[in-house]
Image (tube, rainbow, N blue to C red; front, top):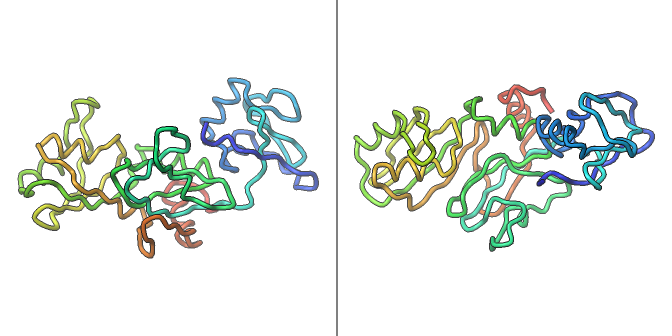
Length: 253
């Protein structure tokens, strides 16, 4: 699992007890739901014994996932990263030429919320907060993601109308949610989605015999690509991070 990273409380830390699933999520190991699954499968230990669902831990407890210890992260971190074309959104893929995590040199372990396919570029958010990752990826929350798209032939009003109304994707057996779409050029448009189906824009366009030539994500919720070049990243400002947490229904960092 991507989040299995070493962590362990040191002596002298506070004695406040928290539920173990929250502890794992707080420290970027996984979401609370995933933590409950790991607990149910007996993969989490506290002080050498198998942990129980609902158990609470404090600063003196040593928590492990598998054989790896878990240490509390120094702080909650959210990064904005400009993924270049040709980079695969995976932490481990022996067949990929370049992985996203190879490009993130950061002292705290982070993972990404959502994906962009190899041929696409643009904004990805990364964090060490499992609860935030889960909240951003939950489709029912309807978080906005905005894209710039170039297709292979001239865009018509009929195409825009049908795309905006929602498109039935046969291979996924689902109809996309209505979305905002605006023509920006003879072959280009911007589109705002509130869900994240696999290769959604490419599938939607292909339904109407259009092929996507270029695709760039320019915004996720309140965060944009401003100030970033392909392959670079930055920490969110405190104001950006607090708003992101609030929009996800979570307490501020």
